Image 1 (cartoon, rainbow, N blue to C red):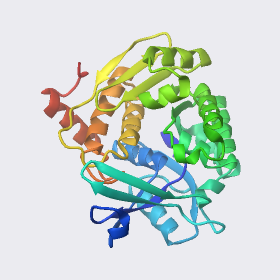
Image 2: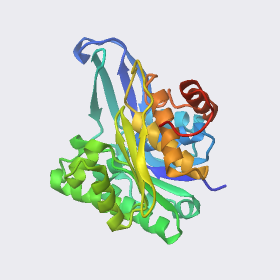
Image 3: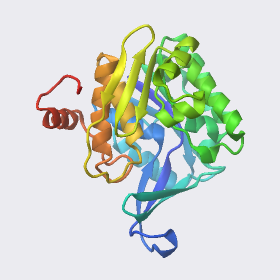
Length: 325
């Protein structure tokens, strides 16, 4: 059976500090995992959709751990390959003090960076409803960039919606430099149907913080839908030749872990579109998903089920549907 959403990219093992303070003083770690694309795939699975994630992991115990865990979350991992030429990537999460989390990546030359267009299952892409991509994969290596553009080509040939979250990682730009990375991200965005940057990312990419200007620049390239996230305040949405506006974020009194919230939000938007909701309604649903994610530790632990999202919206708004205004 074909998946509703196909995605691909790097997922790493996360070693989260078991106590606060600089890592030099930390003696124990909790083992978790996270990766933008697999986070979205898991988020969609929890929301009741069929998702498929492709990647390369090291031929090591960490690689086996990732496949086992992501498959256990209901994601199709049949197209993840073990690669003997490089290890699975790692990252460490440090908690200096409440509200001050830092992340250190050990991913250079990881197995996922050797992903190529030949690792793509073109038949799965051709049969899916949405192909979801991020800018992280595009910055991992030249072979990953080639795979991104090949996947878009296949999707376009089969009328598959292409979703793109720039998900900027400035530490990955060394190989290309900022200008080169900016051009690559913009080139991918121009070929997508749905683009979902954060407001700061949009400004870095297009030189303006005016959301309507950013949307118009993307529409001129052929993009059909734009969603711009502005942290805990609101999300802007616009359709090419159609409606646009802002959807307020849900108020969260205590943020436990903000990492992964954007991936949850992306899963929420895609879920809404799969359910034939309007873009506005999809963004409203996604805002609730994001709010629930930041209320829990870890990248994927807080990803909610559909019933949890609907209950949360009802509790916050006093009804079971509609858009927060």
